[in-house]
Image: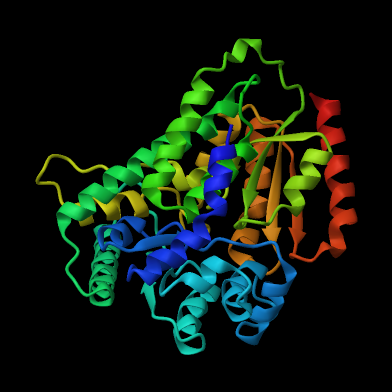
Length: 388
């Protein structure tokens, strides 16, 4: 089903290199709060640098960040230092959302030590779902306008509203398809698993966005032609995964869950369904593009560095209820304090409201704890199967 997408993705590093030879610039970004629409509107190529799972880049990142920074943040610097990843090596500049102290340092160190232009994006610490704090949205709008100005200076020309509208339309098209794929596991007879949808989403972080949209159309057409009623019912334990960033290549825990007989059907991670959850809405031809971008990116889903705990809890409860999950795996990269602080609230709320148990997995990118994690997950899934 996704063979064409996989083949196309294998060709992407060469395509990026060719584009750069022709003078087109590549801009990497970290975090779901950076609007790639601005990069596209500037005529540059966006790459979501969301790789993880390898010990070597995380170790190399210790030259910049303390060992008690999370492995993902260290990898954000280590990949560029080691020059082992073609995407990190290809970027001409990066944009970094300030979602924690480590990512703030990542932004500073790309410029100071790696010699790459690096543009910051401040993000307010309140999600303000009910729009009761106008200063929050005004702050974020200002940050987006500052980022727009920095990108204009970098690319050497004005980013026009017309181009932003076109980029918004393309990104909305992509989000809507991806969201459809993540919704398939709602049914017990899904033609696609959550992890397949995640892999498709990962491809979209790296590919030319127009080409990616075409590939999504092919996959969508294939899925719609499959009759779910003819598929066997998936009787595996239905799991939700929540927590720290799961980067491209960070599959240790995902593999163990599958091998133990668990079936992840939903998530609450910033590289998963959250990324495609909400579209950018512009009302009429006179709607303000920057206002629309600020609305979508700030009022999407509150990151744990934000103060809106009740909104996060309600969202996780809704997903767990809608997808009929039997248990939640709480994936926490060691030293990711923002996610770790939420764990007890989420665990207690899920059990009190839905009787859904939660398993905490704290880990690094090293394979040393694989057997320990396997034992925990196998025991957890057996416990769930005994309760269902």
